[in-house]
Length: 241
Image (cartoon, rainbow, N blue to C red; front, side):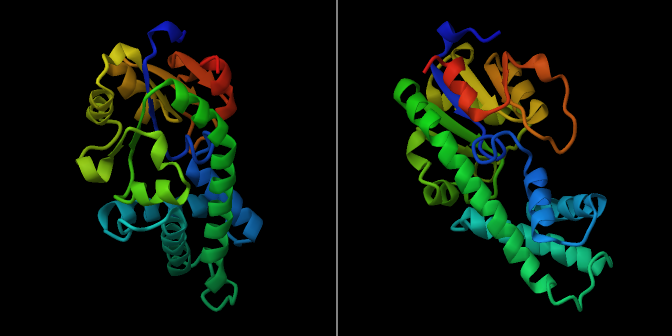
């Protein structure tokens, strides 16, 4: 159980925590595929998604000034190209040329709406605690935060592509704790993933809150965090805002 009396600072994950309310981004993308009408099954989409993520991790496609809309477009273009190359989409289908932009636009609008719902909670937390962002990202997180007007909430940004260490390595959270200049047991980490956020944070002595939404894969144990919420707004009750 969360010991609120010890909490002096917060570390937030970004992707799938602030921008999707705990919903894994693969699930957000799949919902957009369905809404837009991309004629593929979920197993084929999953393979395309994994291919795209691996490609982006190994190749400098995303530039430092990319907004999130540009990141999403790069992701979906890679996925659609893979689906065509592997015969799951027909190249002569005239709709293909519009799938990437339609899916990325749908996802971007979802992210913006989700962030606006989270903003009142962030405002209240900002008034009460110093906050740091710790994220696995592509080197453009500051451009993304600026696009969504989130940059001023955080005293420091710790981004994997910049610091050279990625979750689930606890070292990236240790950098966040250092930035807060607090003992680890006075810090709460808020994230969506047990493996990438909760477990490494707790290994340092931090408390952790998990925002649990539809996951890419089932992660257990759910109850391992000091607190589990199913909607970002529930943080108001957790922190007595």
